[in-house]
View (cartoon, rainbow, N blue to C red):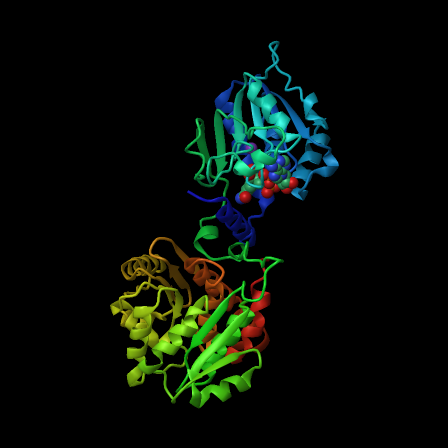
Length: 494
Ligand SMILES: NC(=O)C1=CN([C@@H]2O[C@H](COP(=O)(O)OP(=O)(O)OC[C@H]3O[C@@H](n4cnc5c(N)ncnc54)[C@H](O)[C@@H]3O)[C@@H](O)[C@H]2O)[C@@H](O)CC1
Ligand SMILES: [K+]
């Protein structure tokens, strides 16, 4: 089962793996033709009704695979307005190949052709797929009514046009129906749906036969975090200060650099405001690193249980707490972490010396734990040499803990106890001190704007990518301070 957003991510990841969308479209078109063959014998009249996006493009490809049929392509709109290069290229290929095409500029004129009673044997609905937004507009709306009125077997490409693949309901929902002077929501009523790569949540509710076609998307496009996973994290242009994340880093004492690295990474990963709660003994040192940081000094030279209340009140004003960088393993550290987490019900990234408390603490918080393999074992988890086996062990341990895990390694493993994703960006130069602090801060910033699993997966990917850029510049001489400034580039979805 795959949602529309996840499908877009996987599709972009496939392209990054060297399987571009045009290649996938060739497979999709082939699968559509196979579905037509299953629905009607050679010689049957087939009307392919195509929109101007890639859903239409799939049917433009299918037309080349239907030589044994009396097939006609109906393009809804002028060819110059086809919206994607790959669909346009497939349209041009049809024209040059002299495959019958018709352009329909007024859908009231749409003539599906076919037998004497006015219906073809098969209509392929390739008007709109996963790119639909809102209720059907013209010319697709009238065309959908014409398709529904015909006696033909209707084969929908990917999803019936006007149906939301995630819910099975008409797109746009009640609001779009209300603003639409035409009245009730319109969607194509399909007999068969040929959908791509995986089942879609909304299709099982339809009264249609659903076929899932393998279009050659590699399993790695789902398994490994890729540039597609960055899609949809863009900032709302109307957002205000604080809307894009307020992060509280709690750490420092024996160290001043670690909380600073986390905080700077959180800022570069997109957080609006980052506060650092650290012992007064290191507060001015932390502040001295950057005027972008808001430092909240705590009395003394170590964070301890006496600070739990103050930190809880700072945490209440933040979206995410990053707990652990540079806290050290002094006597009071564990007691503080235990006390804080017991009373906390928000989101937190837990790293370094704070990790040991997680398995035994009773908390309502949603945690993302970022251990390396040694720390994972220290927490009671297990590891293995075989990556698949390791992934399964991490998933099971995350399920036991009830928290998300990001287990660092040459290949990082991320799980929320349900899904598992692997990350293979990064390089051996990143074993240098401080990169884990950068990762914790990055994940913290992301956890303010997306779910814990995705925050961990994207954070691992982005920090690894920043590390790869730093290694290009500095080789194995890279240092952790090379990473934060490279995060914005690493988080571009290309
Ligand atoms: N992995 C993938 O994502 C793949 C996708 N493919 C096909 O590509 C499709 C998605 O293509 P696109 O993203 O180009 O999107 P669509 O072809 O679904 O829609 C494209 C355009 O329709 C217009 N539109 C949106 N809502 C509308 C409405 N309510 N009324 C009228 N017009 C509307 C918009 O201008 C939009 O750009 C999939 O459904 C599938 O058929 C396949 O070719 C191969 C792989
Ligand atoms: K469709």
